[in-house]
Length: 247
Image (cartoon, rainbow, N blue to C red; front, side, top):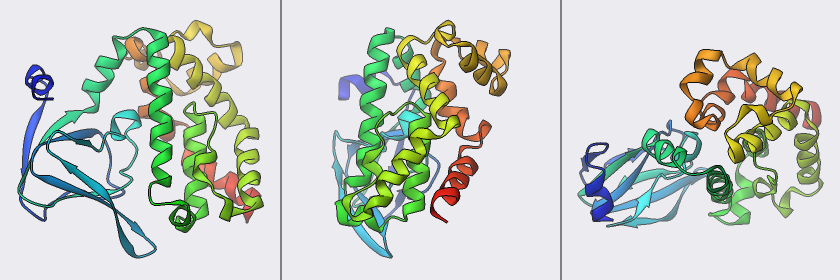
């Protein structure tokens, strides 16, 4: 890890945190990961008003890595257990390195990372997962499906009963979610707009200008991660779909 960090010194910064300091809070905007150079970091999540400790990151460990995938809000809170020095790894650096790989490798890596992020909802156990508001999990499942994850069952559990199947069916059948899922998967694999069919190309260019496409030509899927939620107003679309099916 030290050799890797030393090789990236021009891209990264070190930050010092006193014992008890909050590094980031659950719900904060993501955008960078951290590597613990010295010290210890506690990762926790607020569940039904109770603090649940998910684990600790010690020297050489990385945390906050889910932010490298899509920049979504933090899923947990990170706090320094003792005086700690962390190395910041910006998402732009990760995307730059990912963009230099071939299409197949990018597709595999992105797929694995998406699954890892969604498995985070189960880290506290299935019982705790059920305590996360059903609408919140539905919205996040909608987001993930639109960004190319075909199986979003990770967001639901047996305690949801028939609602879980109804939610999955609603998300899979939603026209917006379905077309963006197809676009996302294709761009993950090829990074080539010519693979999109006419409807997908029209949908894509309705949101993204030629200038934005040209600026991200090396890694088009970055547009999905960085801009799709805002430009397509996925939050409103997901909540509207939830209301239609569960109000």
